[in-house]
Image: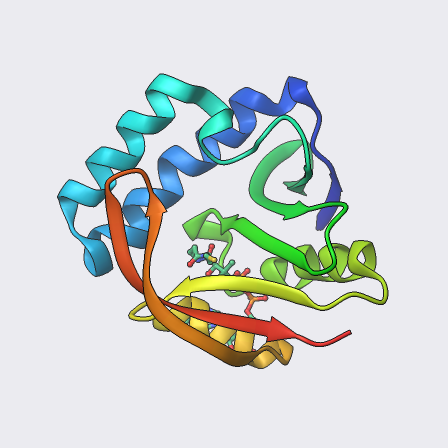
Length: 159
Ligand SMILES: CC(C)(COP(=O)(O)OP(=O)(O)OC[C@H]1O[C@@H](n2cnc3c(N)ncnc32)[C@H](O)[C@@H]1OP(=O)(O)O)[C@@H](O)C(=O)NCCC(=O)NCCS
């Protein structure tokens, strides 16, 4: 049974473990091995700071029992809630966990719209957000991580 809780600084090893497993699984096919290598190198050098800034953001952990099996990060204190770092471990995908995780983001967003940038060729992610009711509001080449550029869609979920 999945549940969601706020991520604390003590979760750093859990978040890193999730990203270390999900990034190759997510991006090797769409962005290539070099991009994955650059991302993991950034993670080695900066730890959670490579995705989770100390200020202006809140993190969520998806749990299966006691084990952290997914993450989401969203902005706080802005007029739109920006969502990123949304990952569910491959063996737990397609069981509704991502939808549950997003529900917590939606609750945190309240009356605000939620925006996310998704690699256009990542059909899994694009389908996921479309099913949740997100609509495309932009498209363009984006630096998704230092040294990693990809064509991304900007998707918005109205309040
Ligand atoms: C995108 C992601 C978070 C979804 O998590 P999940 O737990 O698998 O999502 P859910 O089980 O709640 O799926 C909800 C819907 O999303 C769509 N979806 C999810 N995975 C899909 C896939 N592999 N192919 C096509 N559609 C998919 C489906 O419409 C699905 O509904 P259905 O199962 O009733 O058909 C997860 O697949 C993931 O971590 N992917 C890799 C990382 C990533 O791309 N993150 C987004 C970066 S912004």
